[in-house]
Picture (cartoon, rainbow, N blue to C red):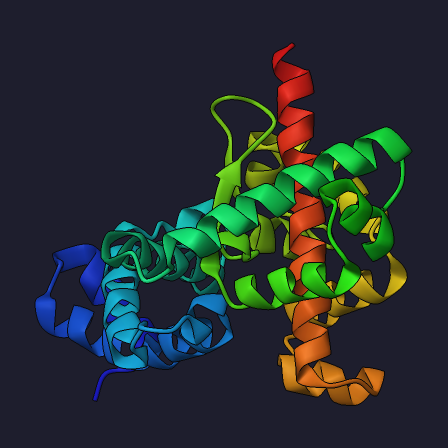
Length: 256
């Protein structure tokens, strides 16, 4: 059997479908890894096998479009394409209830408004007071949107500039060693996001770092922090609400 390097070389030169199939088989593990770590895998109604099938379509697209001369590793490039294909399938099938989407958007707006007014991260009490509800009700709302791709770092969101479109997870990973071409493309959004991550409450920032930089699962993070997986999921959700709110606010300010 030809080596992976030979398969890449032959496919780029001839477009041989046998070589493409060899590449797909070689990287199908990457698809399963990406799907397994995406929040959408925990959305009720989203079948794992269907998500993997959508991810494989993204993998094939990545194989067809990949240009090694750009100096980007295939795994990094393919991960973005796989995520995008899975999220497109989620949107098309509308696996997330409308009520959950509405709750997520409402919370995002509240977090953004309160934290903009305070100039710092808001506490649960401050958010609950703003909404006129008890902290217990806020916690219930956060549980409702846990696992929703609508508040996931895997979702593509607008950048600061109108033409920018970034995936928050990719940008968090890129804060350590961003690719020059990607950094030039969305420098403003990356700067805003990096600052926003640094301003997260310590425990939320730790969850984001362990999950997206170190690749730990929510359960593993819970073991590290000495808390339940459910608590880690809640911290993750609050972190995303803050990050999305700050990115949206920065984009609005830039437009003005």
